[in-house]
Image (cartoon, rainbow, N blue to C red):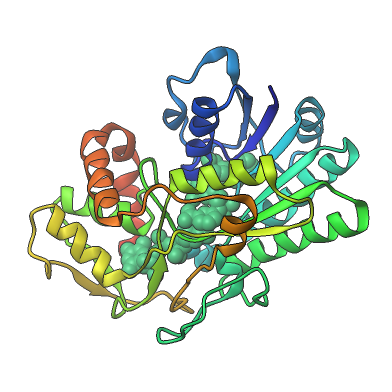
Length: 332
Ligand code: NAD
Ligand code: TDX
């Protein structure tokens, strides 16, 4: 039995990982989460009390972090400001959490000689052309576009430097776009599903040609657990499930599954600096650590996700009006 400290465990992907670990291992999990607008304790309801604890605090609070890191065996670092659109309007929290927060955690992990796994994104590599046969690999140079992705890139580089200069026992993973239950309604897929439920037409940025490489959050969790168990210290692993789709196709699929005409959406003002395409080559993770995704059917995954949002209105309703009011202000 190991004691995992999971930062950002009340968010979308962190809470998925917490449930995954409690379901498939006998490990104990402590969640450290500030409960920002993106954190939700309702995402952690019903977990086994003896194997789970929650601490509400900021990852940049060095005193709390030092105590919690000292008490755990492994730090799994999900906490971040995660939304590109927010980073374009108010970058400061992204620097505080993604950069200073990560620095605070790796300093504690270094001091107490603890295993550290850093969760990051494929957005650190910038974007690819639509017709480029290339995909991102662990060798792709960093070239982030937004305040969000540049702070994530900065946090990755801090972890790499702490490995090389101080011998931090760390691994890093960079994953593509996640979907599934418990994702905040500000994000693309849940925003459109809950819009349709509310009788609002889905909103597509620009022409909708931008491509994202979708992976189910459960597959992200199984990959992270695999890296914690079998990954080589100092290595980076890309996580992806060959799920490239353009945004227009995704909106049309959602509309179709929800009994609406496929063209019942609006084009709205594009995101400044909008990355065109992300695509992940996850050969290293598959070949070296033997990981395979389980959710290969995006169609079925979207159907299940729609059903989850229909059945869990209590979970997302409190955030919906405020989120849409913000988008309306931005013309989106
Ligand atoms: P999220 O916004 O849903 O959740 C973030 C969580 O972190 C929230 O619970 C929030 O309260 C917490 N948090 C924020 N600032 C904090 C602070 N200063 N101290 C403590 N807790 C804080 O994000 P997500 O989509 O679940 O993403 C989780 C991680 O995965 C992030 O590191 C993100 O960069 C990475 N990632 C996300 C995706 C994706 O598609 N969503 C893809 C690849 C990587
Ligand atoms: O209403 C919308 N309409 C739209 O066309 C929204 C909210 C988004 N979009 C587009 C922008 C992107 O091309 O959909 C795509 C996905 O947008 P987001 O859900 O905002 O995700 P993205 O910017 O791709 O970043 C996500 O994946 C990588 C996560 O939010 C990041 O945390 C992760 O690192």
